[in-house]
Every structure is written in C-alpha cells, then in structure tokens.
Length: 171
Image (cartoon, rainbow, N blue to C red; front, side, top):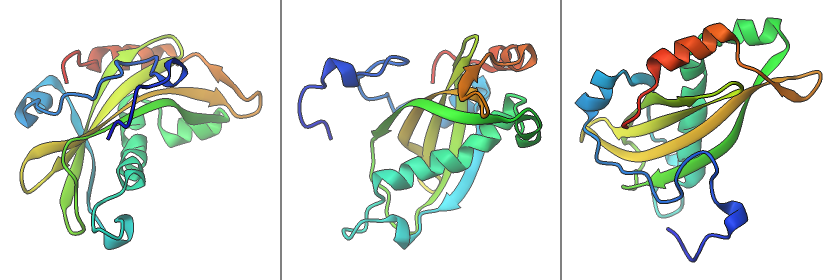
C-alpha cells in the first residue's frame, strides 16, 4: 500500500508510477504472445505470520520466471556464461491486487513491453491458477552486464530483433 507521496528520486524511470492495471483478460495476454514462465504453489515458508505471501515471495516468482523469459529472448544461460555476461534487473515495480495465501496454485505469464539498445522491459503477471485471474504484476527493466568490466553491454542484434518481434504494447 502507498503510504504517502513518492519522492521524485524514487519514481520509476522505465514505466509509469501508478499501480499497473490488473484487469487484462488472460486469453488476451496469451493471444498477444505472453508466455508461461513459471508454475508453482505458494508455500507456508513464503508467507508472513498472517498467512499472506510477502513481497519477497512475489519477487521470488519473478526471479524464478526470469531465466525462462531471458531464454525467450535468445539470451540463454550458456550464451551468457560463455561470454562472461550476467543478467541485471535495474528497475522493478510490484503491483499487488489480491493477496495470495499458502497453498495457492499460481503461474506467471510474461510479456515483453519494450526493447532498447542495451535494455529491455518485461511484465510478469502472477496468475491465481484456480481463479484464472491476475493477482499481481511485476514490471522490470533489465540489461546484460560484462561481469569482468562490471558495465552494461549492448544487447546482441539477434536478441533485440527477437524481442522486438515479441513486444506487447497492451498488457
């Protein structure tokens, strides 16, 4: 929950500051090209004392979905390792519309929303599988980093082209 005005230096630069809209129909996302990048169950260890999934539990699902999304972009683990590159999330925004509890079956639908020379953005939609509705969205802007130089590097042209083909403007 928002507790007060956001300081300007904390405002996101890659996407709008207000909470993401959670009402996009799942079939629409799938038709536009969003892919399932994670399936799982909310475990009691991921929940707070009140039985609700905590923020880090939502972020953990994005982390688990991430490698599958990167692979969709053609940036597989082997390619990154062979080129001494790493994955970095430089910005993230979490919107929770409905709390999840232990035992909930969930999956993540991921859609790419933008691609630039060195970064790309994606939106992870956490779906309550039983209810068939989006309960949370994570918006991320990511890049690849040269692990020796500790600097970002341009995305390979093949990855930019692949991502550009998969960008969804409404999700």
